[in-house]
Image 1 (cartoon, helix red, strand yellow):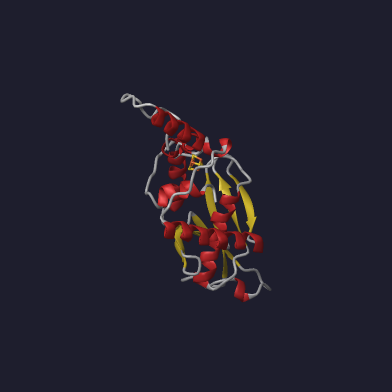
Image 2: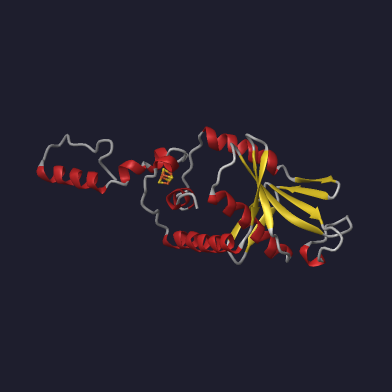
Length: 221
Ligand code: SF4
């Protein structure tokens, strides 16, 4: 959802590059991923759950899944039974993000995809979850509406198409996005997204037989 080229560089080409943001994010996720459970009144907290959806062809690991005990009068079908405790409990995924709150669709897609996995695995509806922002220690509730669910189905299909093709999409340089991308130095979006430079380079090569001609910065793909 963030960038198809970044997705293909990481998952098709197996390229990765750490930067300050990815390392900070990893620390936050590592602490959230410490496997275990915790009880707080009518709340059970599970960390690092392995999830999958056979329908979507997705798998992953949660930061946190809270289980909220159903109140009297709520339909039993909206909760699941947990081992060793009475009552029924509604799953509520929480995804941890470094930084401050951002209206980022890819974040909402990520936590909703976890909900879809939980629904398929547990046979229960998961109507909402949350994003937790490390910098401000604030939550943003995310409602898993039909539009978001359809977005995920389309994104999962596109993901599998990328894998089938085994081809990395061309770069599209978007200043605000690319400047925060950890793969900027591998992707080189400004250089590869400008076919004019390649054409100019090939034209120069065709018109000269100078052996010292070389591919300079911003001139090649
Ligand atoms: S630098 Fe930009 S185009 Fe390249 S992978 Fe990152 S976000 Fe995508």
